Length: 243
Image (cartoon, rainbow, N blue to C red; front, side, top):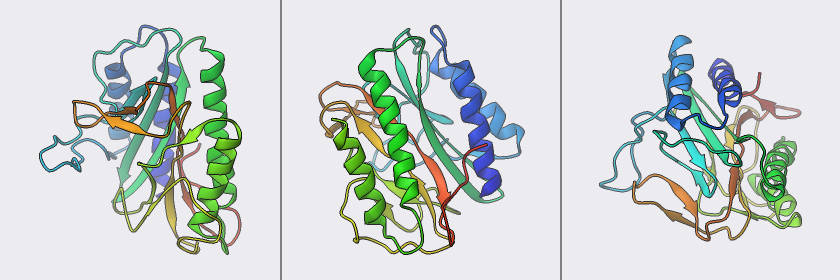
């Protein structure tokens, strides 16, 4: 999983460098797939089954979600514009194990609300990671994320979750990013979690778009998404998806 995580981290670093006004989300997807396959790995998301009975499988390597889209955006011909924000989620399978991470990237100069949203969402991820330790429960992580986000005037998405990860992309359990301390699964060494707060500028409610994959905010306001795959240890959590 460490190697899968490192591949994911390399992809996100390369995508961050490529993002600019005039670049298409399809170009970012092609870059990500080239890097993953160049390491002898497989894109986790490509062909991933839809949760809807008749929904199409996911067609791409990355999820590219722009502005009010929070997750599962399908990359293609869309051209990024100055002032956009883009959430890029990527997974890779290496020797049977998954890594999964996400970042939200500014496109050129962005507005003040967007800047604050990105800062709060990224910090919320690390606030959650700080609680991911032996003796705590999943509710302690979720509560820390929720309290931090809401104290800054934003809302945490409740319809999409963090999750266990390992030989499967979604493995063992799902974990809301809102909760109460002392509740949920006890954290034990060896557990691996894809921790991913999704934060909206307005309401936490969402809507599914007509492509049956892309999820957007219900009120059309901005959304941001940061994620790491982490491992519970006897001390601080180990982040598997950073360089």
